[in-house]
Image (cartoon, rainbow over all chains, first blue to last red; front, side, top):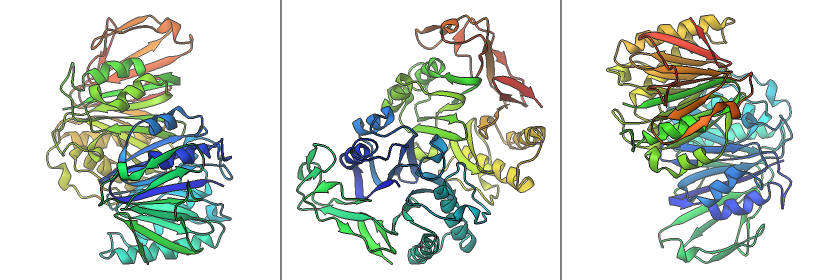
Length: 256
Length: 256
């Protein structure tokens, strides 16, 4: 299995604190040694870093940890290979373009039989069940909506419907973004936490690191962090209900 | 205008020597200050780094310069904005998936009226004429070949035909790859150079740096570097003829 980390905020925000905790699970406090990747949105643009090396030993992960990249929307993944060999093209997040938007996707879980589902527009570059499922979901969205639907609710409901369909084939926890919203689907395991004023301190579970967010933020900031398992002590992580989708915009959840 | 740098080799090769010369042109020895980007292929996978900052001042460019990433196929670009504002989504190389392959594209030049050409499958995320032209080219390839053509010659000829068509609208020097071959089209300005045994020394034009390739290579290595303008002194850079496409595989040119 793998672990997911996402962030959605109303202002460009530095994810390094959470990232520092997560990458320890990529070989030190966890066994997810088979690569990692991160996608940072900047407006319509998207920066991605991928590495098939264990995140706890990756030079690139150290770079991401030591340089501030501020983003309103981030998807990150550390991999424990269950399907597909360890190589660059099999590391999440996967990306594709639809409607002139950058879509990024990362998955935690294992699916059965999904790789035989026919694809039309999008085709996997690597060999994971995850990338195949992503291509299938985008295919269905595109088939129903050759142009973007007017209502965001329509899109949210469609993503949930497709997620339900795929998750019938196994475990399908995922983070997905079209650069506007962050869609988080809990098939078995996903938690989230919103930080807003009054900000306090937080202490990572996986490494000795504490941050006082009141010194790093303004009173208007709203930042939600989504993770497979809680990353900090003493904060009210909300465990998502199985089979639900929560989408986030501007740091706040929009249930569908 | 912009500057292009490409590399195609028969073994994974470090591009840092050429890259060090090129990024000086992004604000020091040249005026291409409006961002830069690089795509490194690793098998079917592709790593990209993009930055809307001037390459000569970019922390990310320094990182790429200081870490060895070995690749058989590289596309790099430094930008002088002529069309579209300076932002992440307008920095080359642009990437898309077709036939389950990573395609990357970088352009030097300016095109007239191309942004009104209709698109079907691929749509630009940014606002450059370059990305529009790339989407149009991929649309045409996909329309004619919903699955990959059996012969590589067929694909090379189609790329050349499409390149001729676009370049009738302006200046269209480009580097394009489908992860297998590197297609280089010269509309007005492009040069290339193949290094192979016996290897000698090379000295960069844009900065004080000399490399003795005989110490960095094995006798079997074949490495071709493609650039808008020669990057080194005293090496036999070949100036491409206007209106021609040269594609490279394993470091060697395959004319069509």
